[in-house]
Length: 426
Image 1: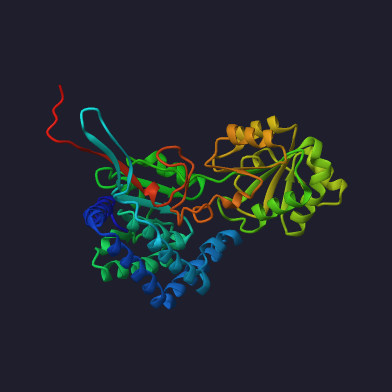
Image 2: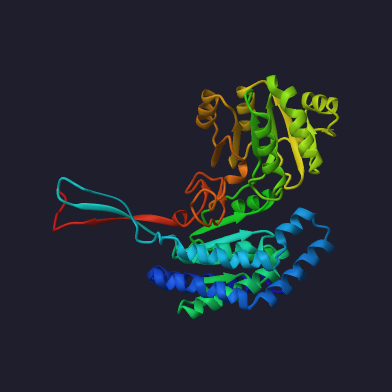
């Protein structure tokens, strides 16, 4: 086992190489960056057999370790998913380049011309768990936005991520860009992460993406600025006027389509006056799809009376990200009750209301603080691609410097450029 000093030296060398690569990327033309992404997509196809073999080893290890089915699903790749990863790079290549964009400009009375211009952040450290696709998504977005990427997967996805990282590096080299522009940390040693988080002179931003313990560990140990991709405790509030059919559709889509993702529904709130009308149909559909309903006393009584299987909720079930086919259910007095519940238990990720009442919708929009507020639609739409932003590196639940899906624009900062003709300040 390597000594701490040796590991720290290795991580410093890795970060230094990223810093040097970031300068080359900041000067690269859009065409060169796009060429690298297209070449990387092709390289993933060429290396598919090896990537899938390494992923099978990761999944087998996760299964042996007793990880949940949802966890294994997030980890697993197959030819279709791998093809989707490669296609995502082509989609990023087709997006407009944010670097150099003038976002605003104005002329001062003294003749100075002032403009704000997008520039890369520099070096981005991505720390994530059990999602090998994040390796390529993050690398692609960072390269397109002119940033070098240090990719720190969890040990569960390390084999898959290293194989994907090799393919991506092939694409960089094919376009004449440094392979160090996207590096996968090659060791499962968690101390490597903590060593990198101390290098604030080399790394500009850290983005942790995973469970609460990972987020806390990164935020507490980092000298590098952190944008948190925190847990998604997402609520759907069924208002008094909510139609039954749409209530079923939104609840099913939010909870059942992909229960292991951050924008999945974790808690259903139902207006007291509509609970007897809505809960039996919604609960039956969810139960038939294999969802365990953990209910407060009122919703438990209504569901059991309708013959829908349900269990009493424990206090910790409210405010919990299950990432599984489990849903907390609570009947609230009305919109005020729903808002109070969200303030107490929400994670600022995604909150949704289903209502026909415009005043209720507008109040929900105004008073709920979340990275995305949904009115009459599923929580599952809080996603960069679904919102028309293109690919994303994650969904920030931190208000600084980004809030919500982090696409290309959110991976840049802005500088002022001031043009004059010899003016001096008096």
